[in-house]
Amino acid sequence: MTLAGRHPVRFARQRTLGRDLHWWLARTGLDTLPVGRFLSAPPTQLVIDDSRYRAAVTSGRPDRRPVFTGASGTKVTWTDGSAEEADAIVLATGYRPDLDYLAPPPSTPPDILATVKGCR
Image 1: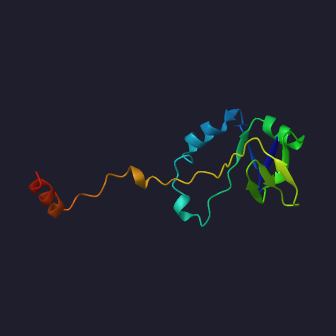
Image 2 (image 1 turned 90 degrees about the vertical axis):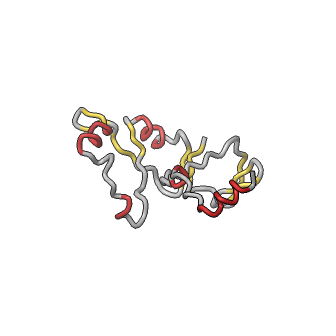
Image 3 (image 1 turned 120 degrees about the horizontal axis):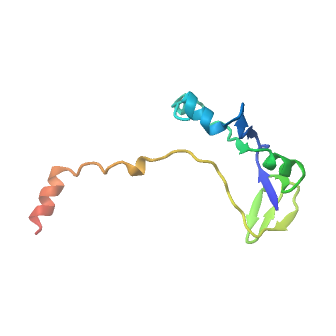
């Protein structure tokens, strides 16, 4: 298995001072702080870890490589030009909230409603 990415994996400790990270975020209000609009770029995502993930990546399980430069069929091409068969490619591109599709539709102009009613 290979973990390919543009940047090194950044880890955050799961527990600090005897409490889970999510407890601290909720207690301080940082989990709901609307800081996104003040950032010029989205923050780098951290992998919340109890040390197992860091140990696995450090030991080379999974293999860590820079992101591939191309994919065709079942093969990926790496930055050094070598190609390799891939059983699966999972693109974890991050999450950027875009919830406009949940907004109610704009109100229908009255002239369209009158036309629709007149067609009955």
